[in-house]
Length: 249
Image (cartoon, rainbow, N blue to C red; front, side, top):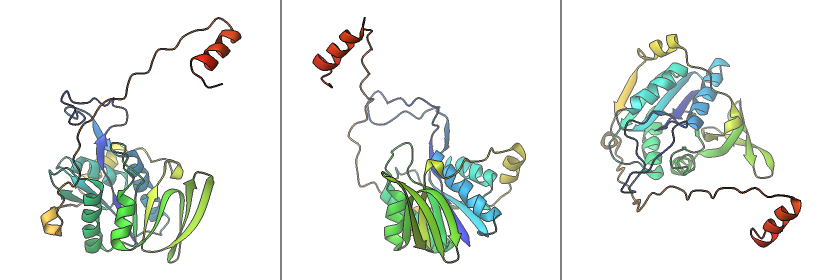
C-alpha cells in the first residue's frame, strides 16, 4: 500500500508572529520556518504503518515555494521514501492545494492520503475535505487512532461529545489530530540519508492546474491587547465586581 503525505511549510510554532506595517500579511522575513505540526504527525503515522508492514511506500508531497524542499527533507529524514515538490510562487489557498494534490494523487495512485487536519498559519481545516470531494474518496477527519484492516481503515476520531469510531473504504483521505501520536526525534544520520533520497519537482502547469487565488486578503491585524488584571481586597469585593462590572453572576 502506497501512502501519500502532504506537508506544509509554516512559521515555526515557537515564533511570535508579527503583522507587517501595512497590515497586508504576517511578516515571515528572517523567520524560522518548519513543517506544520499536524502534518508531522501524519508523516509519523505513515512511517509507523510502514514499520508494521502495512504500507510499502511513503511519499511526501509539498506545494509552494522552492524552500519547501527543506520541509520535504525533514519528512524524508523522519522516514519517507521520496518527496514531490509542486513548486510555485503563487499564494496557495486550500482549494488550489487540493486541486494540486488531486493531480499528484492521479499521478502516484496511492491507496491512502494522510495529512494534518489543519495548518497552524491559516487554520483553514479545508484541504483534506476538499481533496476527498475532488477525488470522490472516503474521508475520516480528526483521527486520534488509525488501523488498517484489509480494504478498510478503522479510524477513531475526536468529536465534541468524545470519540467516534468509523470504518472507511480504501482508498481514503485521513486527517490527523494531535493525540494520534508523538513524532520521533529526527537524528543527524537520518538527516544525512535524507539528502540522498529522490525529490521530484513539478509545476502547476505540468499538472494542468491553475492555482490563481480566488480570495483576497483585505487586512491582517493583531488581536486586541488584553486588559491588565486587578487585585481585590476580599471575597465581597470580588463578588461585587463580578456582578456589577463583569456581569457574569
